[in-house]
Every structure is written in structure tokens, then in C-alpha cells.
Image 1 (cartoon, rainbow, N blue to C red):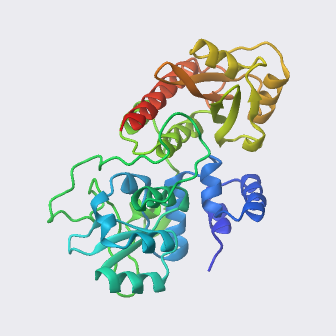
Image 2: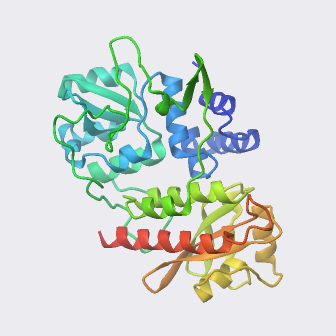
Image 3: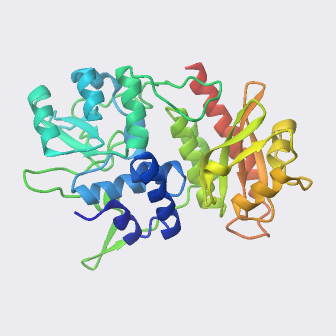
Length: 359
């Protein structure tokens, strides 16, 4: 079986330098490679899911499928089994089979699930989001890096009402789940799921479309968890700026939480007593585009690999609990809308955090 890192590079989904850094961290911490790359902000969650599906020869669950899962189905398997096997029921097929998302969709797991619940459709999902949802569903305390005043275990009802029983959950046009059908011997993938476009009998990779600010704002209104909201925001950042980061504010320090195109997110640890663009954004609760020279600003500029940093505060209630800092726009210095859109993104993310906190 091809290694997932090799597959991601072959598909052009990650840079060699980002993959090497993630492999080094994996050797130290033992975390899964796709999850590390997604957490670092250098791999889109859905792209990682599709790559895992291609590697393992099974359908994949995208972020929208996990967000729109039927939460009542979790009770169909024992909680200790779900936790131990990293498996979570998320929907049903039109034929009534239970759709189960798993970190490791191995044949042994399929057999065990079929003994428990009967017919199933087993799909793969990256651990970074799935493990959190399993913890929420089955009561395990989740450990999260982003420690702000938002509940760490938040579960929302499905974003849309569960479809009637005759809705085909495997229909690619379904709002709830767009997985490809299975037969006894192989997986027949829909081109929209695999990321392949059939042209004259040949398959070509479709580049991921950069999300718009309007689409991202709408998606943030329905994000089910804080991590999902952060990932949506970073997806927009990755399509809009050459580098960027979300930082969490803990007491008087800004600490890296999500990153894109950044040298080393772990190094992003800025004391707010020192001047920086992030400090100005936090103190003013407005978008900041300038800062006087300081060691903190020098570090921020170096990590983002840019000459100019723009930062916007993420406000929950009356408190700036986090910030987004970005480097150069992908459209160049003439991009006059970059600061405005960063402010809109930060406001939408703050609104999402506040909504999740209230839930």
C-alpha cells in the first residue's frame, strides 16, 4: 500500500518541506500524519479525507458529512466500542445500512460492526476531527490546545433536519452525505468525491477551489464545533494569503493555534507586553496593519515570512480571545480588499465561537 505522505505529494496536496516537518513531529509525538498536516493548516481536511479514501480503497466522509451527521445514531454502538475502535455512526443509506465513519476502516472492524448492528457502510475520516466528535458523543474528556472561554465539548444538532427514510444518503446531491455506493468487491467512486474529472476517458486532478469570504461566512454560521470553525477560517486564509495563523490569547501571551505557510507554528508564542501587530489588534479590537519594531514583531514577521503583517481580533462578548494574523496577499501589494476581508473573517469566526459557547 502506498504511504499517505507519498500519495499527498503525488497529488500535489502538500509541499515537500511541510511534509518533512510533519514527519519530524510525527516521529516525536506519534500523531497521524494527515491530522498533523491538517492541524498545521497546510492540508485541507476534505483533501486529506479524499487521499485517505484513495489510499485505503474506501469512501471518505468530508467535513460537511461529519457536521451534518445524525447524532442520534451514536447510541447504536456501545460507547466503549466506539471509543476503542475510533468509529462513529453518522447516517444511513437508502437501504437502511448504517454509515460508520472510522479512523481505521479495517476488515476486522467491519466484521465487528456487522455483528453489532447488521449491514453497514464503512467510510474513512481523518482523526483530527473524528476523534473529537467521538469524545463528544461517547463522553470522553477531549483535550484541546485552544484554551479560551468556550466549552471544549460542544455538540450541536444536525445543521439540517434528518432526511426522510426514502432519501438516498449516498446520492452525491444529498445535503447530508455524498458518499459513493459500495458493492461486494470494490468501491465505485463518484468523480466529485475522488477529486478526479473524467475527460476523454482520462482522469485529471481538479485543483481545490478557493472559498469566497461570503461562502466562508455562511459556513461559519453553521460550524458545529470550535475546531471546525477554526478549520473553515484557515481554509479561507490559505486561499487568500501566502501565510497566516490563528493565535489564542492566554493571559498575556498570543500562542499559535492554526497555521498556513508559517515556518513553525510552535514558535509562535508572543508576549503581549511587547508591541506587535497582534498586540495592536487585541488592544484596539480592530484590524491592525502596522506596528513599531520590537522583538515580538520581528518574530511574527519571520514566522510568517513576510514584510508586512495584518492582524484582526477575534472577539467573543467583550473580550478579544484570539486573533488572525496574515502575511502577503496572494494577489500582491495592490490588493486593497485584504484587510477588509480579514476583518470580516475574524468577526464571523468570533460570532461562531460565541454561538458555540452559548449552545
